[in-house]
Image 1 (cartoon, rainbow, N blue to C red):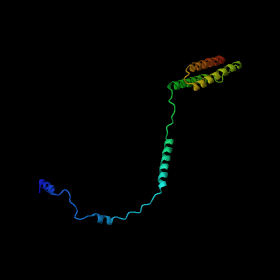
Image 2: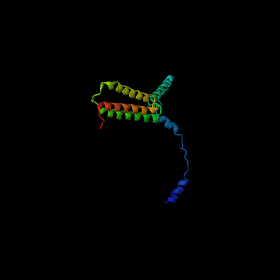
Image 3: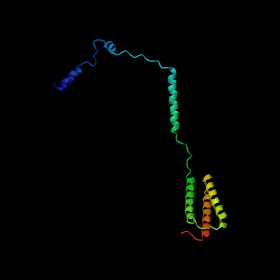
Image 4: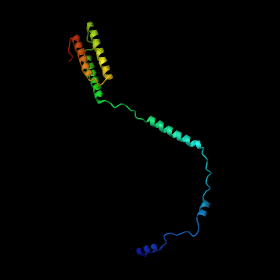
Length: 156
């Protein structure tokens, strides 16, 4: 039998065939009986909804991103400059550690140290006050100059 003959025979078959009898009663008889439905208390659905909402709120609270004020690049730059200046000053001052200081200079040195601390505190309070960097630089320079004179030498 050729391929064309098979196609011709397939075309001759009916598109739909109805079964000779109704098959559903036989199928239904073989199915197991449905399990009795348990009645769920109506308040249980509301409780489940409340628990779901509480869980969602709790997770959102734990995963929240802290809202910090956007950093001011100018303020950060001023703070970094002040910190770098302080580190350099402390390194330079460390070269004179252990050098004898005359007693009459102690109040002047303490005043300059206190001034530097106050300027740093003012910069922390108002990082936009860039003029304070110049004040801090001059205060550190005066303190180092006075220490050098008292020690009788300049650092190498």
